[in-house]
Image 1: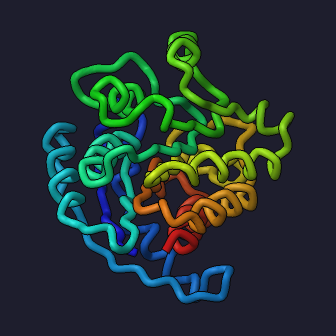
Image 2: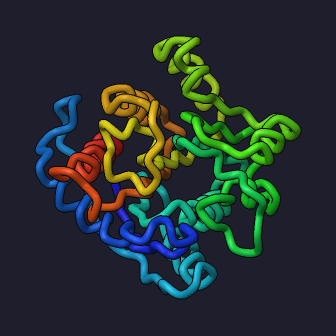
Length: 262
């Protein structure tokens, strides 16, 4: 797997300041995992994207140009940084994979009122508005904090989403079976993981603390299942704030997910 460090933290509207430290910390923690749970040794080739902390637009341009250079013969993973980096990452990926789908694991929908720049609060909505992804090829999993405007947007445009309450009522294993079946029909898959999809007990250093999320085991199982799909060619892991971590719990969870994706 090609891992691109993107230490950008200004797309979080001032709420993700510590995320710039995450890429180095996650890579460091990943070295503690000698094998994947399948018994296979992870192969990770680390590079970096130059960022401009004063400009989302310039950083997005750098991400786009860097990602577009790759053939995706092996998966590519962006290590953020805040969730705004997904916009440029998916844009570059979709330019080489028309019809690609976007699977987002996040406590929030990322569908706030869109602006000229794709912040972490509106990147999904802006990708759809800019016609970079089809509405029926977006799935958001793990929602448990959203605005009335975001809920209305998702409902009106029939964008598939699953709240944590829905996951509980459906049963996680049943949900996972259905999710896998759906995304396996996409020609290619981009997986975006906001660490706040996990419960704060498992990820205390998420940029946004939202009670009632996935357990670390559930999140790992989900990632392992999606990794088995041949269509998965790109991913990102975002919104880890090492400054607020407790014994590196959050960074190690992110590193574990990175290793399982490799």
